[in-house]
Length: 109
Image (cartoon, rainbow, N blue to C red):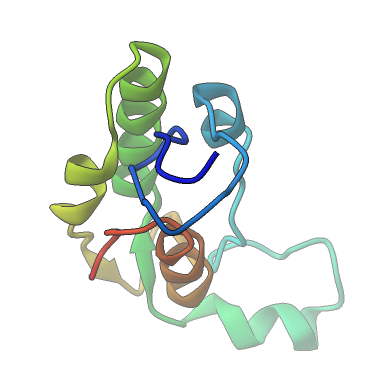
C-alpha cells in the first residue's frame, strides 16, 4: 500500500517492495583495485582510478543492515554518509555506490 514504510525510508508516493538487512548485506560493488579476473589491459583502466574507501562503504552497509533488522529507518544514516575518495588500497567504484544509495529516497542527496 502507498504510504507504508518499506524498509529503507518512508515515501508516501512510492509503492516498492521492502528492503531488509539481508539484501543490504548481500550487496557487492566493483572494486577499483583488483585485477577483476579479466585481461590486464581492461583491469589497468581501474587500477589507478578514484574510488570510495571500501572499509567505509562496508561499514555503512553493516550499520544500515543492523538498523533495518532492528525495525528502524536507515535513511538518516545514509543521508549523513560521506566516504573518503582514494586512489590506493581497497576501494569501490564511486558511480556504482552512488547509484545504489541513490535508489533509496533521501539517500546521499
